[in-house]
Image 1: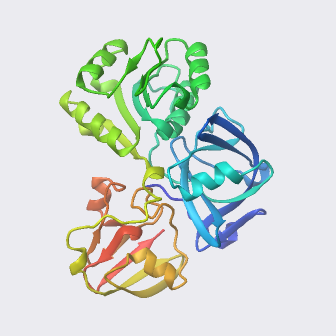
Image 2: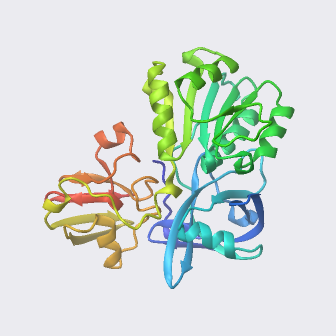
Length: 373
């Protein structure tokens, strides 16, 4: 996962450097009602406070709700190449503390505290690239995909995009007008296929569960550039992602051609953490954390993760989702053993290099040293 850490001397007007991570206070320029339960928040970013980001990354929004600081990660829907304003999309989640608060209370002119953009669901855009990016999105999983589509069409004239977008019904399709427009202006370079759970009577497209038979028919409708020139992206609810993964495996698509972004919003508001086998057998261990030129020693009890223990002791470490998905809390274990409740946010190579996620990490030995940044 890519991170941006800044020394205190890098502080500019309007920025707060806190614990090594860069924070911004941004003014909300506009709120766009995309669907009845999804909004896009457009930020006014002054030229003096330029925020660099890549398509596919996310912003962490920080708000005080009911007297407590709440952090949530939302994917960026704007493109650094085609949009002058920075924007994220937020869809209401059942019992979602932040998503519902933003939809109900946020107004243009309000100020929001955000963390520097993060995320690894990105790609380098080059004018010389000639590739076919096949994308699967479900619900608000379209958000980072939308940014990637716009950047690809803008920066890679010889590349094409195909999008298979699953939604509950036609009124739930986020960015429908934008997708229709891009298909028109970039005719032949963007292919969008909608799949609805509940289709209207006059619906001419696909409906129902995305299964092997449907996927075979969909693949007949999109260009075949060969596996060497094709990349697969997916972002959406966990169930959809697992289903697509299974379908692609059945078609013998190599794992290294498939890239996923976990649908963080659907998991971060769960109050009850899943039980992990062996957690009850954990014991307290000391952990040394090196961060922003400082070294901290904490004793992590068996019922808490490393990040939670550090925050309880007033150590302000970087974090966002606290579910092991966004990887904002990633650090490298220089020694000792750490067990993770959730490993999905880390790649196999990152795990092999010793990277851990402090928000779901539990020390197994007393010699754990974690370096963050």
